[in-house]
Length: 352
View 1 (cartoon, rainbow, N blue to C red):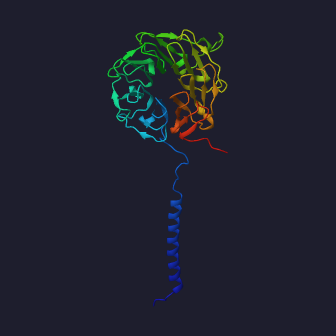
View 2 (cartoon, one colour; view 1 turned 135 degrees about the horizontal axis):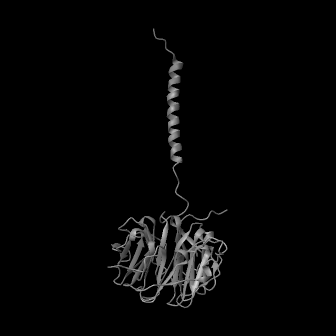
View 3 (cartoon, helix red, strand yellow; view 1 turned 135 degrees about the vertical axis):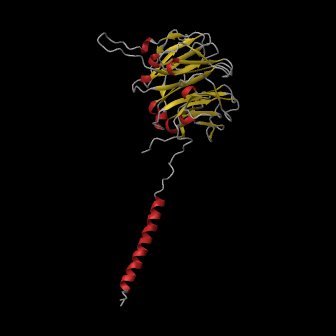
């Protein structure tokens, strides 16, 4: 004989209801725990290595994983451009609003003739990493990189030829003031110069940055140089490790160290560029320096108050308007000659 126990049936019903409520609570809790969007804007999360800005409106940026982004309205809006490769891109240059080149790892050279709507791979004939590119005009260009690589073209990149001795050093940057006068900087204070379009290269040095050691000390090397820029065939600047900035007024026959605020902190300065008499240097820890007299004197800018990410490159479209790019998608903009910076993309400094 069955005995009817209403209390036991009621308990089972309550248990089932409780389980359902717990399930609903868990679902609600899981929904609430969904990650929120970061409280900052990211044009791209990639590390950014190179920027070209012909005027305040048109900007191209390249970086890790072959990222290419472009703005046609001064950085208000950005759009990705499709790359035909997956290699990281390290530098970019435009000679007019339609014609540009980008270089990167494994000998990558890309070319556009329509402002970046389409990018085409060019045959560099080299597998070494390329870190920098400079074009004097639409036909004459140079790219430099690993293992003393110097590549040159006289036909807009249709063909590339090797130049230089191919020494076991990394060349970090190249700049040509015109089709004949060019300069390369790299590891251990390396400076190379040419006055014949790269047919021959001569070594230069800055005695101010060569370490002086006694016979009992280990050999020391000059700080590596990462950036070089010339306003003409005679007047140029270079920057590098330990907050180093050097200058020449005679085409590199003599180089002199320039005092600047980055020396005390020993940060590495990666890139140096000028527009008219306004020059900018970008480096580690969000640091940038500005000069209003062509590089004779330097002041710290407020960029490190905006970001602590390293800044790898910048470009001044004119004396007032410029952009800087760096780690984790950082894009900064100035409209007042680098006195103030606005973050367009990246992770900002936390405010107290």
